[in-house]
Image (cartoon, rainbow, N blue to C red; front, side, top):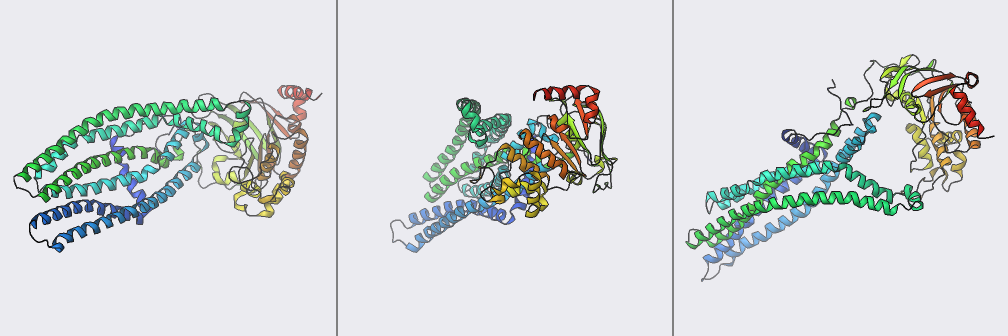
Length: 615
């Protein structure tokens, strides 16, 4: 049962302290599942390092006391050297553990990164197009991706917290030689740090979230200057200085914001440092007094001085680790919010539970596709883009959709491919609502050539093969699709033919002209056995002669299939069996080319206006 609706156009709110801290056990479990062996090794080494610190202080005390004990008499070297040898051995062990811990931490980080990236990528694939329509989505994705490393940091901070606790217990034992209250005095003068740790963690997090959009814009201006696609316009229009200025403008906003926060934190830190140092000085003074009266040995004095300093550092580290646990958990809220997001709760998400069991998609369309009283508006908006649209596309027919820019043609394509469901009405395939079919199965029955089709920097074969990824290694099918789509002759002229890398981003590949890329995209569509072909301005980059050649071939190769064509070129549109004219989100005319010309309406005026350009 889905509760509530997630609106991707609204800002996310910061979690409460309890909600934030509840993520700690989940973070630990996450890291453990990602890397159980290295996680346990990391824990064990942390405990050992904590114990070694106390052991070294105690061995130092033993050495000093034994030297003083034999002062003025013959030295028993074994009596003195044994604890010194032990110190060397323990230090070697500590060095070895510290060195190996770097490798262990690296392995944990890599395994956690793989697991978390996998979760993010799969979640992005599950989300419907509605989620991608808002800039807040990209803010959240940026936050989730940027905060992945906090999963490991949160668990390591908690491990550090436990290790520091073990260290404090050991230091309490050592300081008890001086007085049991010595440790409590240090703890009392340092404990107010818990408030500053929580305060600074929340302020840093809030500032980071506030500056997310600023960071993305900064990165955008940086990418404009570094990516190949923009170089020509930047040079011809002299935009480099302007973009650099914009980059530094947004970067300076970030730097100044963090500088102000850091100065504020520094002032508060100084107050707490003075307080903690006063506690340490009191313990030291008391230790000197006890040693001067002979109540403790010089070795004890050395041990107490070291234990007091270590205790101060450990107590501060303990509160610091606690603050880090809280801060890391704050950042992790953004990662887990995205990972936990139920795609069904997104405003505008597809309704995937209309029918059970699902209808079987026909191998071949028998009736056709019908839009019944369809109205639609985009999530986060109040204005309807499509208004009570109804028309029928007979099976095996070719339908052209025409209209001025902004009329609603692209939105119609999004409904026909079921990127969205109508707000009102229905889109039916062979008499059954789209929602009665399994979504993945429905889309396997549809292939689309978008105007803004993808330029994959893969080989020619892979660029075409992704049109039916299950057959991406079927070279015969790929070559036949290339012949159908007009990319074969181009491919055969390339250095490595179908194995030639396209684009120049990752290898010394070959770049194609706009028309050649378009032929690749058209060839990609022919990989599919789909019964519904949708062409959204598919020949925009081709000249009139090439366009005519493509559509003559396309009409022949799609014989028996249903074709929906969106185009501004009426030389292409007139080849369709039926034409649907859209204006202001409504169907105003519908029929064949001859029928609409005789109607002497909107279509006739648009057709005549374009035809005049060629006289």
